[in-house]
Every structure is written in structure tokens, then in C-alpha cells.
Length: 126
Image (tube, rainbow, N blue to C red):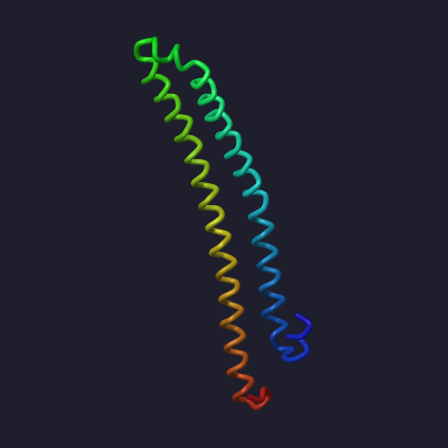
């Protein structure tokens, strides 16, 4: 930042603008990501509990008619709930990735435009 400001002070404006956008993006992302990851953990725990109970009661599940289907349905419901939250977490991660990638690409674009303008005006020597 200091080197860019020393070489081309004009670039400080887009850098400060991009920096403020970066911090605003992260400020919006962190609380949502924390809540979604907490929810994903809460929905994953019952799956492990249910599976552990099934391992301990395998003989009972096999001996009761229809218990396999009941267990499978319950496991499928728990897995579906967890996967819906997990996909939301991944969508949120992708949103952050796209937002920060856009900021980076904007900085590259503004740097390229500034270098072309400064070199044509004679203020930047090639």
C-alpha cells in the first residue's frame, strides 16, 4: 500500500475504496458464516447419534419387522436436513469467493487503466 502510494499516488483512491469494500464484505460474511456453521454442526450431531444407536441395536433392528425401513427413513430425514444446511454453508462460501474475486479483478482492471492513462500522459515511464 505504501509502495503503491509512493509510486502512483493516484492509485491510493481505488485501493482505499477496495479496502473498505473488502472489510464491509467480511463484516457481512463472518456472522452469517458463524451461524450457518453452528447450524450445520447441530444438524450433523443427530446423524452420528442415530447411527451409533443403530450400531448398538443392530440385532433388535433386524428382529423387528419394518424396523429397517423406519431406521432408514429417519436416517434419510436427518441426512436431508444436514445436507440442506451444508449446501447453504457452501453457497455462502461461494458468495464470499465471488465477491472477493470481483474486488481483486476490479483492482487489476483499475491498475491497468491507470497505467495506460499515466503512460500516455507521460507521467509513467515504460
